[in-house]
Length: 332
Image (cartoon, rainbow, N blue to C red; front, side, top):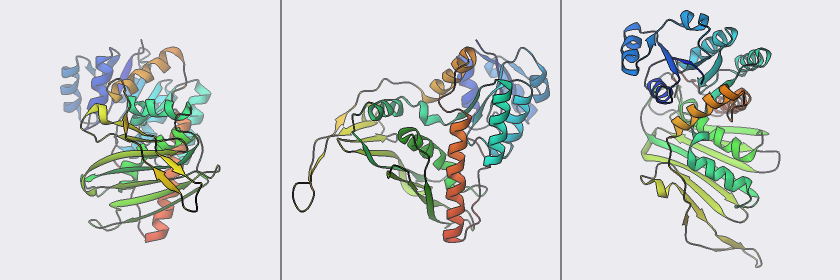
């Protein structure tokens, strides 16, 4: 099994380190705060190490990265140049030029590069993706996603970069298309220049459309992906408190025979899904890709596509409401 060093033991990084430890492949912890690295290493029964030490250690096969987003590129580049496979939390980088550099490095050196788009590994999303690809919903007609809550307000990044990568990744995964047009609008309410809510519209070459609404000034937590097809509609409600309620199928019918379309509503059906921790599934997938030289579901190319949509949405946001749209400083 691959030997992995983890870099970045912050809010989200500690969860990644824990999962790699539980899967039996964590070898070392690296953090800018040496005391934090030592404490974490004691908890996880591995060694604390400096980054240079890890990169020169031939026994280390891969590096997982959950450092602040503005240094994702530098850390991933250093690891790839050292011949290490890389798992990096979203975003892959803060611009597509850097992302392309990482893709080229990984390809030239025959290395695995995987991006932490967590919800691609959520068992409920995986089941939804199977339903879409299997034709259960029919031809897709529209998708929309809401990711909203009250806080955590941030000054160094806007809500687009903080929340939307998850939803962009899921929608691209379901459609299998790159958006032909991206637009965005939003509002900066609490911190000048930092958008607190953003709505992004996506248009695809097939004619399919989608929108994503993200906000941290919402009165309650809402994490909902709605997929509308010709035959049925499905809702992935990740904020539902009960696992059994997270995926529901609606076999509504629309009667188009008359002058006005008429809906024939059906009762929602709970779709059974086996329970598992998404992060553990994500970490397990990375290990399998390294051990068996498989292309990750969220490889560098997928990360580049998500980053491209983020950049296009940010440019549209800045143009539409005159914001200096801040990007991500933190990972996870």
